[in-house]
Length: 383
Image (cartoon, rainbow, N blue to C red; front, side, top):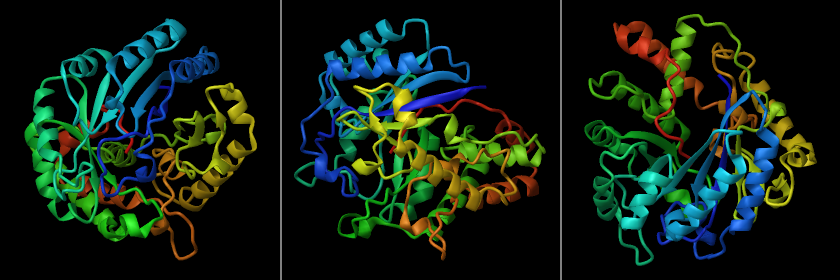
């Protein structure tokens, strides 16, 4: 099983919502967007770099914003056609869109059904933080549009875990259990601006307790087979550890980045390093070959930072080897995740340990067998 390389494409920052916790808040009125020529340059560099690389199974483009569906559908049909021309049969390509699902019409429905391979919908369910410019909650509109998508392949959701909905975790789980939608629980992104997100932040201990509670809800569910993300991978790691799988999984950034964030300008960032800080830009993918991005001083610094995190967290971890260390290698920098020495700590390990204890102590043999399988995630999604 090879690597799945993912490009998170910030096609435009422009958005019709003003979600209270959004880390792109200063840019949401900016109408700048990637051009067809920009994207053709990106596709060309990606095709040149990864064609023939047998370690790569496919390349995924996650169309992100802002709100990507504010751009007219014809733009996407054109660029998806350019993809087919440039990649041909040389490399499998997947396209996923992450949307607030507030803007839906017949043409966009056709694009979601026939253009994209997956659709990720941002839906918090409680808290009332996903509001329009007038401050009105847009959840009823999103739920209505989500019902319109019922039965469409590869639809999943992202729910941002924050102070306004953490006490409603079971209700969130029951919603997705009832609807049959795969979902991801995404802890609040740390913008570093307490004035903006401070009221919605949750302590690390509460976040970990919520994820453990989510694990319990899933283990006790008769209806939800695949665990929500990120628990799906945590469960597989716990199951491999219990089954004493060979310790052969090691994530090494020197072999190349699995996730690259592409800003609207074409500047690229390694996931987990300071996104948007030009000092951490790997280079511009519109104009530069990917090999140049990997040869630069910023890439070397990103590798060093990842190795430091891995050394501090993984070498003594009982799961290292069945877990490849990517959780800390690619983790977002959040001050609340640092220990007393200022070192970023792995937030996956406590939840994996909880799952291991539950699996070992229960009679959930069928669930354990399911967990041990390397099933592909229902959809690719980035908050």
